[in-house]
View (spheres, rainbow, N blue to C red):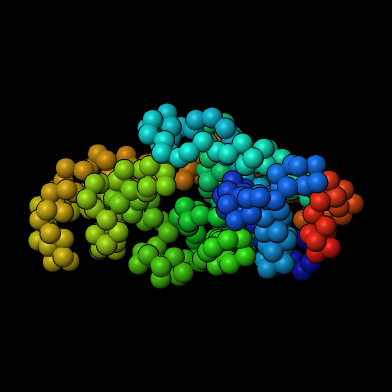
Length: 303
């Protein structure tokens, strides 16, 4: 250990895709003198420097989606089907962003058939009983909130643009949703998620889903109560007979949607904490060479 024996080490996990997408839409027209598109890359580096300043990590690891279908697409052809094809300029920068992590000596994890979220979930699972490591997931979207655990696993996410950030611990998730992180995939199972084309139960929206989850807990528990004929319990909390009917008819859709929304924690990756701390691995010359190539002069000065 670098400092005192009992010092907790902070690992920051980067949801690279989510950050790059957000940065690209915030800064789409940046380009280097050679004409290489750099908006997403500039945003990624700006976010990385902000993370280093705000969170002071001991280790940083980057997680990626890969092109091609995942097991979710295999299970449901409509998964993310409504999304437009990624712009060529963004695709180029997603590929190029790996050079940034190589320059910073940040390890990269990805796996065909799985999403970046599944890499994050698997790493969290591997370290869940390690008292010496705390984890902060840096992301551009809210899906990763289901991985939050007390203050051991927190999510640092972008509220808007690439500068306005918020950090969620378990208390923060409960304040926002009225229930804890573990029930977020149940919530999506009921109300769906238009951004991923997850259907949920048609006709059940945010308010009804929140009431059901905060009252009964998991989808499995909701259906146990229904199957016991406890409809009065549902009516007592304001669930109308029409909604009860929708629930009864939508069991399969709810369970399937929950499966799609649940982050996997068993992706076949061999995760190891880096041997050296993030700062010990830094080679400023390597980074500045890449920054010059990309014409990132102001970021070079900040570094």
